[in-house]
Image (tube, rainbow over all chains, first blue to last red; front, side, top):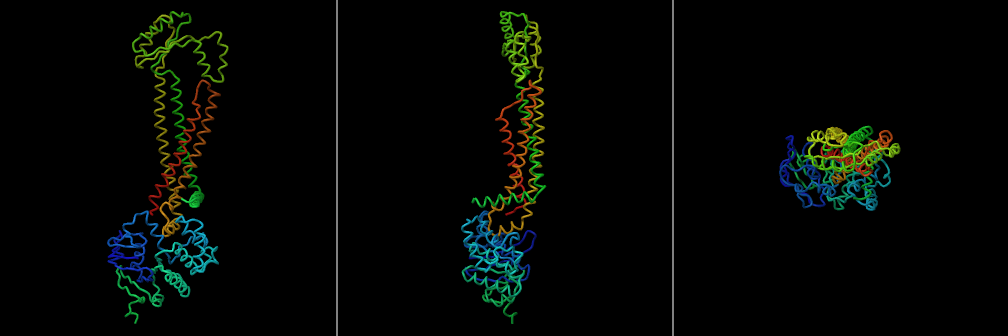
Length: 231
Length: 295
């Protein structure tokens, strides 16, 4: 479903963000992307969203070479990808309900469809009761649930979570991880960039490790660190 | 596009205009001033052209006859004038005809002259058209010596001088309009840039949610068009009311000066102002969106 073929990325300012990345992610997988800050995790997600084009090599998503995508096709690519961020990125002046509905409004979805789908998504993340709250009235964990609901309205092929637990305490983090696992079990591919060693170690999923823009490890059921380092 | 989407774009645009406050006001006023100059200049130029058409032009002279000239002599004079070199046409204007013309040109106050019908002081005349204005002085001298001719008058290039003035007025007005118009475009561009900046967080969210470029741009485009249209409404109203006022005042004070009073022309000028205002708005917002809204 998602394929990187010998991808290099060098930014105009000379920074080499990715070197020779080749990786294939199949439909329905749950993949952790680990590595220190500046290892190239963010660049990788930017290439998938086609915010950037690779300097060399190819990125294939859902059978399409992203480099060949026309500018006006990009929004339709992004509707197949759900995004969750460490800093949530909710609209501060809008309620929970409006924030989730916004994801459908910007694609011109009919009101009937919005009224049908949005409550379903809020129920899925357990936020129906707080649908009229503003983001600042919610805890971090609750805000992240709203983000998950928003990311899922288009039933995306791929959910990219960029440090989704970065601002959350351990207990709340596990609640979010449980939701992500649920979403994954219903067929959505999940790619999660993270620094949370404990989560990666306990989830026992596929781990892709980046360092200095190179892929140094791709291990099924691996831990945050190499097996040897883990002891 | 769905009605609800359109409604959303319009609401966003109005909210932005309101939030930008004085910047919006400045944009509207600049557009209004630029279009008012354009409308005003256009009407002045049209009027001068119109007046010029009513005056003796440089290729025309009027030959006034003495009071005691007989019909036969008039016939003979007609032939003699036509025989002069360079004459294109000769038209006889009787004293009655001349009085009627003057009456008409005075409009409502024409009745002041009604007492003159009994004892018309105006002379009979010939209106002589020539091919070349340069030959007029010589022709006038020749006509002066014909039998029965009292006086010869010609425009001495008044019309040409008038048209030269409108030529410069046209250039000057256009230049001012373009200068103010360009600043209007840039003020709108600045306003839109501020709007884009104020909403960059929301724009970022819209982009990763898969909003199309036009969905993101539309509210800003509408904001620009709205500002331009508001400015053009002001200018249109000022030009329309101002012109109606000037025409009325002129009719009161200077009845012999016939200003153009044609509703269709006025409507065309005002309509043009409205269209141009929206065009300025579109130009300004596109300018900003190209630079500050990479999607």
